[in-house]
Picture 1 (cartoon, rainbow, N blue to C red):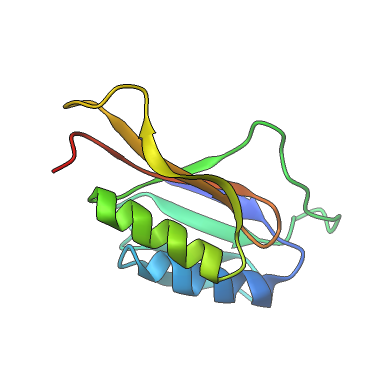
Picture 2 (cartoon, rainbow, N blue to C red; picture 1 turned 120 degrees about the vertical axis):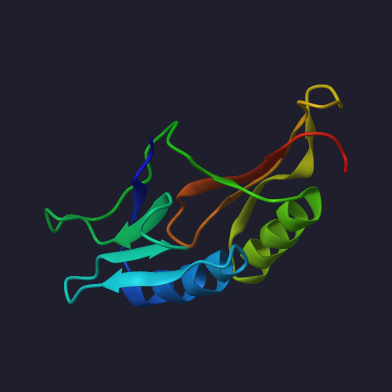
Length: 130
């Protein structure tokens, strides 16, 4: 159902460097990059995508209170690796990888971080430790 989500940036080149490296961990790449800065990432046009762009109105990008983008990982080790990658790229910690709630077949294993503009992201995996 989700086509794409968008986060704002005040430095598109810096943001592109962050997301080029981070989203490569999912096998995603730039699918579009326009002169105005709008940049779309994904594994293909038939799957959910993430866009990074300066705001259309020309005003400063700001972080929405309570706004977060959640990225699904294929495994718990991938959650750990993507969280570590985000931190190595300058992302800020918002919650280290771990189980939230109870362990089991529907356990939520997630990690939280902020990108270079302060946008909050989560990477998660639902399911047991396997």
